[in-house]
Image (cartoon, rainbow over all chains, first blue to last red; front, side):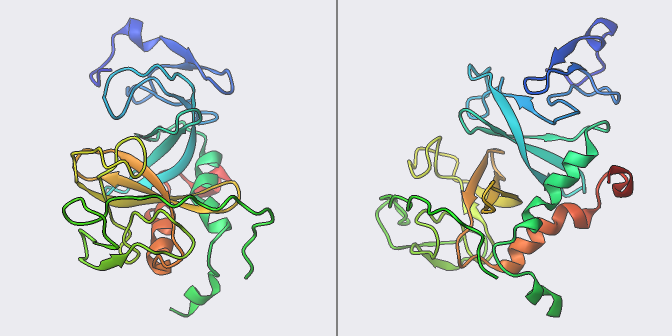
Amino acid sequence: MSNDIPSSVLRTTTFQCVRCGLTVTAFAPDGRRRNHCPRCLYSQHVRDQVEGGPSECRSGMSPIAIAVLRTGDWELIHNCTRCGELTSNPICGDDNQFILMRMAVRPLAQPPFPLETFGDL
Amino acid sequence: MPRRKPQQRRPQRRKDVLHGPGGERGDAFRCTNCRLDVPLTAPGTAHRNHCPHCLTSLHVDGRIPGDRRETCRGRMAAVGVTARRDGEWLLIHHCLACGKLSVNRIAGDDNALTLLRLAMRPLAAGPPFSAQLAL
C-alpha cells in the first residue's frame, strides 16, 4: 500500500464493498487509497494489526466509532465482525456524512448517566 | 433515569489477572497518567482495565484480554466512545507507543465528566463537512 501518486492504471482499479456490493474506485478523489466503502463505511479485514502482515480473516468490518486526532481530523474506527480486530483510518471527503453524524451522536443518544446534571456545570 | 436494559445479561466471569507491579497478583494498580491508586473492584464490571479518573489504560494484554502477553507496556489513551446495540458504552483506547487499539466497557465509577467530554469530542471539533448538508 503506497501513499505516493498512483499510476493511471492503478487509479482506475475498483473493489466491491463486502456489505452493500457497491463498486468503489480504490483511490479517493484526493489521491489517497480507500479502505472503506463511502456509502455504508464498511471495510474488509485484510491486514493483521498485531503482526502487521496480511490477514486470513477477510470478513467485513463495521464502523463503530469516531476518534478525533489532535489536528481535529476525524478517524473512523472499524471492528471486525468475525474476530473483533480494531483498525482506525482517516475519513474520506466523499464518505456518507449521514452515517458519520449518526455514529458521532450515537453514544449521546443512550447515555449511561443522566445528562441533565451537566447543564448546571 | 432508569437504565434501559430490558433483558437480563449473563454476569461477567471473574478473571484472575496479574495486576501487581512486578506481575504478581494484587488488589490495586496505579494509573500511569495521573498516578491514582485504583482498586480492582469496580461497580458494574469485573474486568477493570482503565483509571476511573483519567480513563488511561496500559498496553499489557495481547490478543486475549487479561493474558499479559504484550511486551509493549505503553500508555493507552482513551480516544473515543462507542455504544453497543443495547446502549452500553465502550471506551476505545489507543496505545501511544505502538498504535494498537482496544475496547473495554466503562465502569460504574468512571468520571462522568471525562466520559462526556470524550463523547462530545467529534462534535466539539466540528465535523469536517457541513452538518446541515448531511441532515
